[in-house]
Image 1 (cartoon, protein in one colour):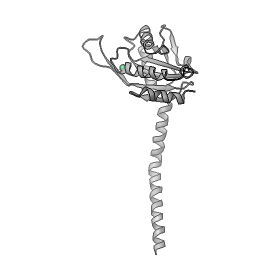
Image 2 (cartoon, protein in one colour; image 1 turned 180 degrees about the vertical axis):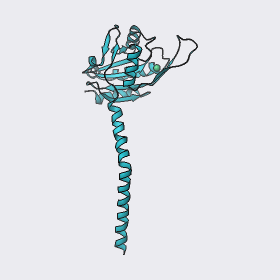
Image 3 (tube, helix red, strand yellow; image 1 turned 135 degrees about the horizontal axis):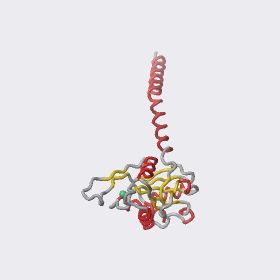
Image 4 (cartoon, protein in one colour; image 1 turned 60 degrees about the horizontal axis):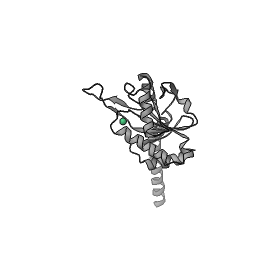
Length: 200
Ligand code: NI
């Protein structure tokens, strides 16, 4: 009698597991697949404008690790903080590793951020940092590729508006593909540690 009860409760447990598996399996697959998919679809081919006013496209950075940040030069605090963190992280790396990286600042405010403005702004944070702008269409396209949000805030003075924007640092591999990202406020030491073990 006791033996029979044990085997029937084992069977009941197996039935519950099978039902759970059937119910959750597809969801789990979608969840895992979706997460992976999100990572593999960040980034892609872009054409922008470099500091000299000439077109720059993503293939020109092949072989280097791109550390990409989107923002705007009038940004009062978020962009300067994050770009400083990137620069500090870079300077904590051995020179050989640092040379394999290209820090890139892409403006989300091409109306005010001309080629010369982004070039000088980026260079002020780090001598290696590349500043890129583009036409409104080019910037919209690259923002879409990197899932960047930005929107001009309403302002009484049309020249002094601020821009709300997402603040994420993307690390792209030498093949141009997404590797990882750093959330806003990541400690430069932690960023440097991740770069040190990732960039080869
Ligand atoms: Ni900003």
